[in-house]
Image 1 (cartoon, rainbow, N blue to C red):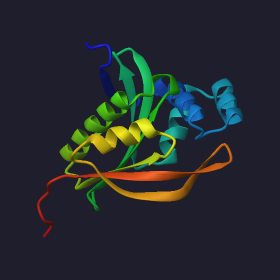
Image 2: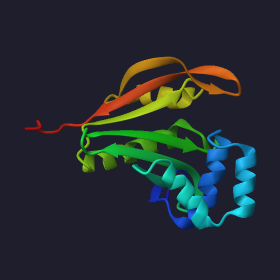
Image 3: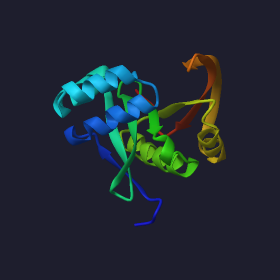
Amino acid sequence: MNENEIKLTRFLLSDAKFVLSVMREIGTISDSYYEAAMLNCSNYQIYNAITERNPNSIFYVIWKNEEIPIGVVELDMSARHKRAQVIIYITERHRSPSYAVKVWERICNIASTCKMRKLVMEVASWNMPMISGLRKLSDVQEEAILHDHIVRDGEFFDTHVFAKFFETRAVN
């Protein structure tokens, strides 16, 4: 396997503490919540807490070279609206546009296989490597910039909204 090869696997019970640590790193959960969960909760309890947060989402773990977990993907698909939204979290140590774009391409394959019409991803303005990587893809459109959309460390940041459309048949 290539040194920079990535793989996605469905979120398993054994991945719970890693997923929690990624959520802590990106600020989705507080340090105190993380520490309490790691000390007092089983993998099962952590897994349930994460998956219950959004019951419509499918979670994947991103693996580098099949052995190093480097991030998490949250994919929310609506069969009714034929639309999917993805959030890609890659740990700071492994953050690079090449990994993120590879994950995006794999998620596009999943969305296409599931007959989605559109895949959307919001990217925070501080993540310029991902924004640049998506802008280089010919089949991805930058749909909008949401100004002062998110707060990180008390500072407001814009969010860039990207989308890919898939060919689908008209709904009767």
